[in-house]
Length: 300
Image (spheres, rainbow, N blue to C red):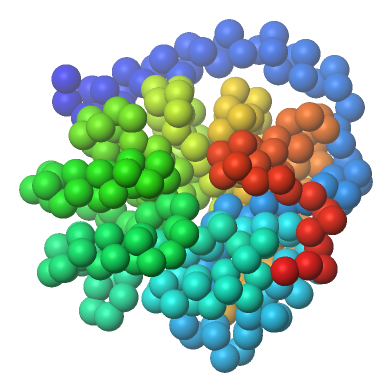
């Protein structure tokens, strides 16, 4: 079956499942939304970068202060270069879950998988530091000739029992699972440009797939202040596999960090307390073996 055919089939199945979810959604709506009490929940920021352009303007202590100010108890951090992640982790080891971004030197988002020595670089950094993921990395356009390299990357991740944090559309995610069905994947931005129907289809197709919703806040919560109906179905169907995030990929995101996290709390506020807690921090507790609470605020 071609990728296009399988995608159409998956989307068709997702649409069919929507009707099956209706009773569950109706039951969920019987529960009161958490509302303003969402501000009492700790957040796990599942998509944070501490890239070199931020190091001078936002020293490590200011990053943790921003987290404190916004009730972010812990964050999954990757950086260009990895030194940024390690600086932040060494400053606040109880607040930072480090992951290894491949980008360094001349290796960037468009060429990292073809850069000489990349496999050795990843292996050396994984041995030197306690990274709990490889990524966030981009697959802008799937090139199946990269299969030997990605088998190496998958092998490194499985040896450490850690995640691949993948920025791509649906096709590369399916391809990675075809290489190894047991690989652990966090889908960055829930596909970013992927339509809600495609997000539902992929997460339904792969029951272990996890996604962060960074940059999706305004798709999830419309300007009318209500949850987007398609995203509402995704949230309730996959409430055990979603996490919020900020994506501080440029300094402007640090400058707007409070409004970004407020936007995340705004859509979490529309959910029942048990669902909001899962997505805010409990899923991360399970996935990364951590205890996350507001008591971490103000600590390192």
